[in-house]
Image (cartoon, rainbow, N blue to C red):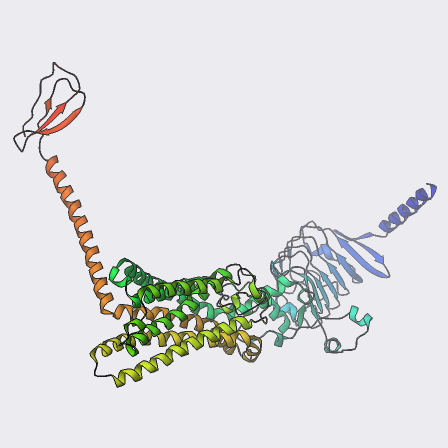
Length: 620
């Protein structure tokens, strides 16, 4: 206890002795010799009179803290030529005039922390030629001007917060010797503790066309934000990554807006075909039109997919990092993938059945039992839809690790894992099978063509051949618009990393790579479903007749409904213009309208009170 009392007494004596060293050296300042140098502390209370800072020339450190300064005028400290450290923190300095630090040629450290600084203009040729460190902590959304960064000996700006994403970051500038240190491979542990981070402007890809954040301006002037080097992901994303991908995705993102229009038209046209076939007995009992209805349903799903991928395409949100995209954490992608895969598998098999139906009708025209019946066509269509839906649902249940990947437009499940390189041989085999089925269809059409040429004199064969020609156009376009996107998708999926590295030479080539691998396949698939209605259904005379008849029926029903409403309005108008005949009847409780023998007379029978009321008649 006695020891604590003695220690406290000694500390108190030292504090009093320290305070006694400070002597008034100007109206608002006190000076003292500390460590063989003179320091000054000033409290001007916000008033900057010329004589307030008439300090001794030997002062090397000046502190004006916790005051109410809001502006530093030019030449305020010009006569304190020996000043090496100037502390102006915890004031309200918003603006510093050009020439405010004229004459401070020996100043090494300037502390402007916690001021709310907004404007600081410097003439690098006349001011602060020896300044090495500036402290800017607590000055939110302040970015040092280019003139400050051009100070010849400035090496460090601490606590710079130039945006809400990059806070309290140190901008460091290194000499050429320091830069060479980063290239030394065999560094000791002690060297690694003092390792420096240097960014070059070449690290900002395509910086001639992409507008990066403030970081690029700092790097061009030789300053590296150490917060980015130290792993500040938020600052790195908003300063470097997001601007890059915003510019890179601009063209693909704009192109995907076209899918809204294409998808809507596909949906409307094919729904019309499905409804008309279902509600017209002569169409729904036809083998060809049963298969056409199945095809239209598939195309309608393609329309739904086209709209969905326009909304959720991977270029829509540039704030999502590539790592997040490549990790495939998009929840809506499996739903989109199920729609796409179901549509494509059913389209392939339905096209084959349409080809087979025409082949049997033409090549085996003399054998009616060899044709596809309407019941068999319906059963085959249902079976195909069940198979397609089952295969499309496999990734949902995690079978074989299959995954739908947003980076590849949520198309068929080309992946067996969440990483971009985890490709699936199962889906590759399914894709090859679909191509083989289309090639088989093409072979059947070659056989049909040869047969028609030999049997050109038969009228029935010619008629069936015309129908086959229309279906062949649909099948061939489906084949082209399926195989071409699938080839592009397969190349894009299975060679993605290598191709992207090759395409990254220029920004335009990289954009073209993304467009070729994402937007063009989706668009081709949509165009196939867009032209299918015009290749067969809308050109078929039977379909045209039924559509015309249905249109007339709808028009007649609408006309009859309108005429009925008009007649009701006219009848009510005539009745309202006539004065009715009112009659009161005894022994009744209520009212009733009743016509007399006169067609222009209406009796109103009142069934309210009774007996002593006589009927009253009003003639018009």
